[in-house]
Image (cartoon, rainbow, N blue to C red):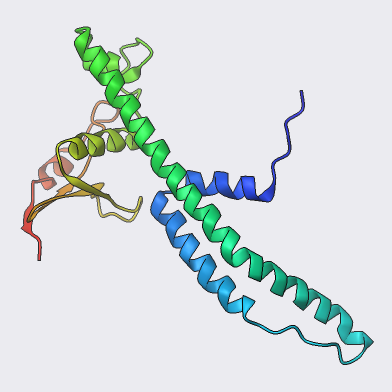
Length: 193
């Protein structure tokens, strides 16, 4: 059975849904700003037959920018919504699986793995962060995720009223945490300015 070939817009939507939601929102704004600046251009008339190719190409670019300034941002915003939906769905699934395992007196590791095995490493590092963030959301905190790879060890920031907490998740059952790392982690409470 052959796989249906997807269109450019379907591929773009799929890509935007895989990105973190804030990246898709940033791309939506950037694409609108760039294409809007291109779309205000005027179509030139050819001076002679040698310029005809450049004028036709310029017209195609102008037409694509005028349509793309609306289509691309919409696709990126739909991707951002899908990304948020997927993250919420995954977090709810992880929490529901955890709750079912705890209700049936199974060890937490069995509940988290979801397949009945006792493999404590079944969660990925990212799934652990999503799960921890959702637990805090359900406790009334506003959870701000940090950019992956450039977070200085902070996975997300919790805010509630005038308090701010920096959270770093460690998947200690999949890989031992060094003593130095454990000693460097401490709860930090800051007043929000």
